[in-house]
Image (cartoon, rainbow, N blue to C red; front, side):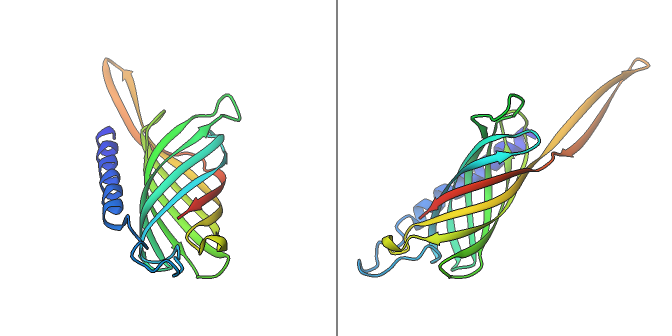
Amino acid sequence: MKILAQYFSFIVLTLFLCSIEIYGDRGETKASNESKNLLEKGYRGMVDFGGTIGHETNGITLSTTHGLQVIPSYLFIGVGIGADGLGNFSSNSKKTLYNFICLRSDFMKKRLAPYLDFRVGAEYLEYQCCYLSQSFGINIPAKSIKNAIGIDFSVGLNTNLNHKVNHYFWNKQTYSESYFIMELPNIYLKMGVEW
């Protein structure tokens, strides 16, 4: 599982660096009086901040995502890094650090644009496992900045898929049992800024 997590980290970092290099200058060639739109094809970045309440992870959550708006107004693909359980609300809460690939679909180009966000990745601190997250939110473009910045509000669920191995010793022989466990989901509320 550790090798898989390292391989996944390399892919996420490579995609992130490519997206900055290729699309880092989105909108700079436009005339200065022309309005930018968050949902145009090209580079898009996001920072999210919120709270998580759940079975094992309680506290503050923070993440950043960067990538490409592949299909204008409908499909964003990006990579990111995040942390959950910061500033624990309870003593038995675990902290998680993860990186992920993000797929996001904005449903319409309205003033209040709803979206669906799906993230899959690898978690690193306490358990090395698979990280899964899905959320529904609303994006509000900031009119005063010509729609170049937006504010997001979202609610979602995240969970981890853990790999467990138990060793048993019976009758002078050692037996191993390997299985996957899906944790109970955590609920989170987030507010974010995107550009």
